[in-house]
Image (cartoon, rainbow, N blue to C red; front, side, top):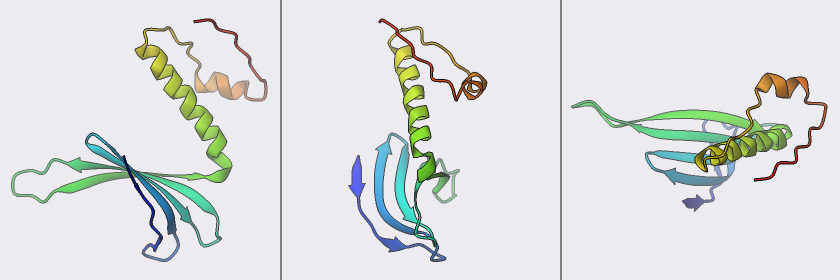
Length: 119
């Protein structure tokens, strides 16, 4: 992993990068950029960059995908990420994780569910 801090103006002047973290992971590089929009609101821009294998005689190119995450969604996003990561870890460990579909979760979102599970 490589950390970098940068403050620069992006083309168009609407998004300023205040802080950036670069994560090198195999063939992919992830950029986590904290930006400020014209209203001075901070948000997170996540960019995945992947090198595309060039055909003979063509120039190297990169495929990029971006998502923008706003502060009002941070907690829900992190809760979802933690749930998914824990599910994957349980599958790798040979456990039998409980499957919950998004529809079930959305229907009961206002009700708090507590589970007592022993491993």
